[in-house]
Image 1 (spheres, rainbow, N blue to C red):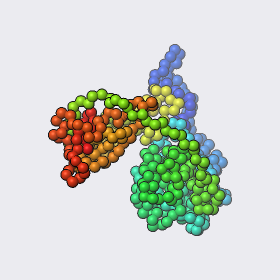
Image 2: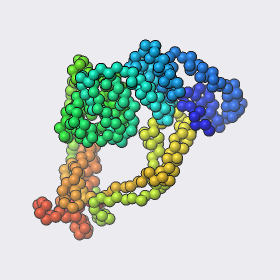
Image 3: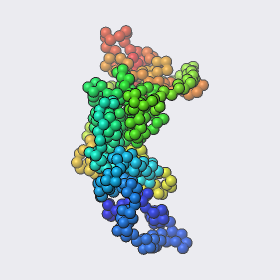
Image 4: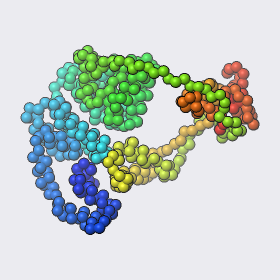
Length: 460
């Protein structure tokens, strides 16, 4: 197989795609042999690569630039960009027009399951090269309008969108402090203290980056920051960012680089507030009051002694064994971006076996051979106890409360997970008093008494 000739689904004619599936699944019926039909189709549709290239080059210039992005065509990109510049097109107009339109089409195809991640990355690489070529031709407009600290969040290496924001802001009179990729929140805030920006921009392509952004906002809130934060990335949605306002009110969503520019214009007073206008507060609904249960879930059995208290780390684990437990459906769909939209079960399985599974096996073999993936497990046992509607987790060494968890309760005073744990200071069961950790003397009033839960825990 020639990997260079593999096409994304959106570039395969529908009839050829259907015949390929018929052949893969041997969908023969009376008067129809899938192999003969497949061969007959390609005998009648032998494509001349030269004609296809001629047809591409015959497209209008701006349409050709858009197709270069969608199809991941690098060859001849710079020549087309130079031709567009000579024709009087401004660099920012080229980025905002055909190039961004191409990336939007790629995103739509990716979301519909008609373009897989490797082809998305090819398109992104073309976009990156185009922006790099156009950047020297852009006229700088000073740095007096405002300042932004910009970064791709921790754990994410994607920077094309972020760098596009940098270019557009810079060429519209803003100074951008671009921190690069995989930037932890501590580094972002160091830059904030050093440069005193008007806003912070956080970017990321991965789904997990949306959770990192949420954690970053919580970190900033807990340290008293109120600086405007603009979030952008393929996995973000406007509704999700609106929900984050409950954590950090001064956060905004930028669907693309130009919306990021409009937000900066508003935040720095160079445009009237539209995107940044505060929405009217939603009417608060009274949460139903939880009705405590009047009786325990059941009699508590004897509490088994755990092998240890505290935390341990297990290393030297067998990677091949762990691989059997990988949730491949979550990996392929949630992380790698494969979509089952419009596919039946057979078509989806064929896609996985053709594209995703070989990549997984290759990476697994490389990791085992080269040792670049070393799995470890962190786990532990802690004393816990119920106190009212909360579950308390204690330090085995000091007896101090490490964490409090509150679980939802079923309507009408039904069950809650907290009901399955024994109350704080309950009497010990069996030999529990002999091995359950005790609060060191001088650490607090009295020594702990009793067990915490049905399946082990602590009584502090």
